Image 1: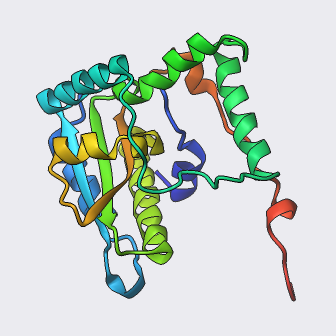
Image 2: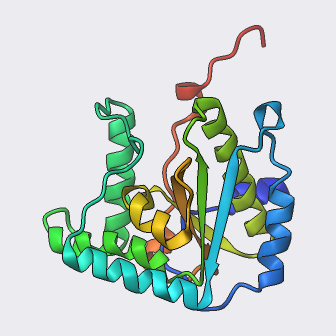
Length: 222
């Protein structure tokens, strides 16, 4: 697959087939993804890959947490506390577009909450990944982690796999710290669902809008 095709076909997939991801495939993809650049070659990330019975156990644990209404505090703000236009508008639009694919109106709050809870089932994906980082690292290292995760998602597409990055997991740092054995000096950055997209589910028809080139790029001297 050409890199242009991988970029164009990458989606945040929200319904997966139960088809297992071969262990050798994810190991090969991760070994390639770890060639992603980082400032000073710090390689500031640490990844946890979870599948099989361990993934089943995590899903069962999260069902208990959600049923109990257990709340935890994220270790960082997933979005700015004051999210202004145009960023607020873009976030609102992609959410409305997603629910529209499934015919869930804005006033049906219970249905929306049930759908959001599927984050903690990894949308049915057979494989999960978590990215953690040293708490002492700052924005440059967070940028490095983003480059690693984007590289990984494109390489997954080259294997015919799909993914969904999930910062929704950031609000359960203590649960995952205990489950994964994350040391105190590291923080949970994000989760990711990995598997094969279910082509029959309407949510996977969503193609998120992007701002036009002239809105977000300026050119000087060319």
